[in-house]
Image 1 (cartoon, helix red, strand yellow):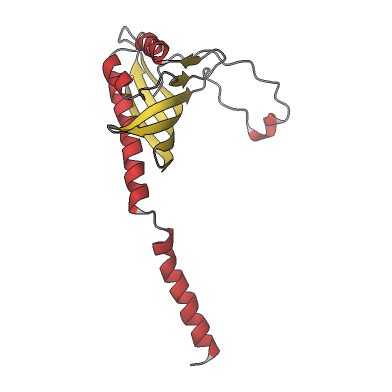
Image 2: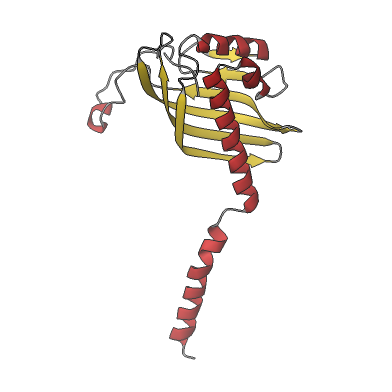
Length: 188
């Protein structure tokens, strides 16, 4: 064989082997599915306004925390997190919350994991008269115990006004943003 054919064979061999090397491991796919399931369970319990189911998704740890978008939206401790969810329930009609999270990423290392999602949420005002749609970003740290993955910390954020970020050409001239108001809708 000449050098050209050897080089071609080696190149093709590497090219054909790359998808196998780049493919996620079965363990990573399982972790990803488990983390997405935890997020889905959170959304479902939130939709039902089931405080018991929501709190069961959190780690049995007094330092659990939830953080929102604006200043002061930082709730620490299971009792405080529980009361915060009860206040979130006041912002939408039970059973009206739906979610679609097309962009989800996460990973695990032993008994710790992280999760990030960009979601489109839909709900209805508490009186059931006004449907709403909003984007919501969620990030979380999870711990694994005997029962599975539990949230240790969760952060959610959404734009509080109708305005999005300034266009690229306006960013340099844009004034400093005012602090964000509390989100009008519940977290994902």
